[in-house]
Image (cartoon, rainbow over all chains, first blue to last red; front, side):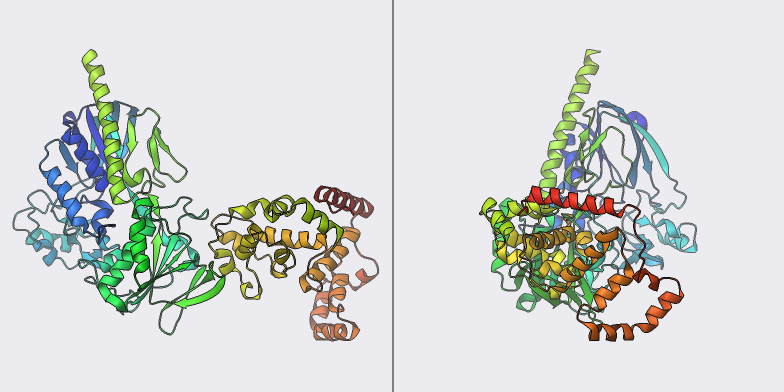
Amino acid sequence: MTASIATNQTILVVGGGIAGMTAALEAAECGKQVILAEKTPTLGGRTSLLYRYFPKMCHPTCGLEINLKRIRGNPNVRVMTMTEVAAVSGSRGDYSVTLKIRPRYVNENCTACGDCGKAVAAEVPNVANYGLDKTKAAYLPHGMAYPQRYVIDPSIVGTPEGEKAKAACKVGAVDLGMQEETVELKVGSVVWATGWRPYDANKIQPYGYDRYANVITSLEFERLADPRGPTGGKLLRPGDGKEAKNIAFIQCAGSRDENHLRHCSRICCMATLKQTQYVREALGDEGKSTVYYIDIRAIDRFEDFYQNVQKDPTVSFVKSKVARIAENDQNGNPVLHGVDTEGYQRYATEHDLVVLAVGMEPEVTGVKLPDDILLDSSNFIEGSKSGGMFGAGSAASPLDVNRAVQSATAASLKAIQVIHKTAATEAAI
Amino acid sequence: MTTANQNAVARYKNSFLKEVEANVEDGHMVKMCMQCGVCAGSCPLGNAWEHSPQKLFMMIRAGKRDEVLKSDSMWMCTSCYNCISRCPRKLPITHIMHGLANYAYRLGIAPQGQPTQGVARMFWDNLAKTGRINELKFAIDLYFKDGLASGMQVVWNMKEDVLGLVKANRLNLLELFSAHECQDKIGIQKMLAKAREIEDRRKGFTQ
């Protein structure tokens, strides 16, 4: 792609998760030129790593599939994967952006046949399963990856392993000589759909995520429940591979806490209520979920979902923020200590597995953003001083998939308005 | 019931929370508690408390004045500050516990014979006299608080430590007769008396 293709009537969408895809598509379907830049090798973001959505308990395949089909069919969107924004300068209607494209070492000839993956022996942590297992160093990010094209991990480039991958490819797709590229573009408006990341559970010292194998995060639990995940959908705990039947969920793990994230991450209550139903799905009446909470915030219209889960006899609720977790060294079970607010009883309860409903932190936390961008106290993007850049999805606020899509549509419309104004000014000149 | 207590009851009738806000150190933070229970669960002496801090806060808001002020729970606090460092709302729980204890004591309704209270009183009297703590006198007061016989027993049990401290120049036995004190100890005593007078007036402790 060359700089001449983009003009100041082009919209740059940063981030190819559900919000970024939506923002890009809404603008493209209105006839605007859009560049969709994604940092990882595939679109779909964290949404594609969920097992099911709430409240309908459908699989993300469904929603993403529709968006991927729209992207494939729309010539106005140009998707750039493994691309990061290195710099943005200028103001509303007239931005210069510098994009850095990391090498994939696989070109567009790739048919995703998988021969390179079979040929290579080296393994790397599997990002798609939050590092719970490993994948070959020549890999397809995950089943729903778009583009459906393999990636060669930089660690094997220049080694005999890399040569094996190249030799195995029948279509000449492996190109180990690829270099990092830098592209300069003009764009009129930027939509930041840079998404979120789970709050680092290691920082919640009393919960011992770093010390106890059977304390995991809610995102790791999504992967355990998923048939495409590291355990094939069985709820096997990482400590000893035993099936976890008595599972504790700890809410506000890092959220609503002046020592960690100040904000309520909003999605975690619904995510946990949803995950109790994974336990029921996997184990039936044998499974047992216990939710430790301060208060359940089932974001208004999902109150009925909460009520249905309350009726489920395999799910119980304890109104208490767990104070600390210890480990029973006989069996590796985590033991939860705290005081129950309803009755002020002290408890020390043992579970097979603890799932921390970790909070949402903006992915851009700690990243130097353009001066034009305005952030709130939790680093969510509020907008820009000159009004030409917008936050969308969970980059702008802690949102579930549904609301991220709404937020992205809104941001897209604002970006379209910027482009219309730019076009009108240019026509007048 | 003491006069100060009767006055306080009359002034804040029906709102113990307002009374706490006005008179207890950091009492205005009590309403910030969201009842998560982390303070109670994090307290290393939690088992010894009849009412945990979280429960005390709820009792204050529920107007359970006597149950709170006459309780010995807040006297159990050892100022380890674990609750403050863990509290998701950064409530100064330790300070509020001491504030409640102090307020109950000043009203004259704190539980009698509570050991922490006795030690605190001993420490204060020792300190307020000269502006400096006389460690030797404090130790003797503490060890002999239950009488001569049990005091001698404690001293006997600790004779190695006492001798060690004396040898290392960490304890001067002459302090029993001539303690080191602040230069202007009369000034300090006046200052403390004035502070007391202002507090008494402001909080209605004046008899």
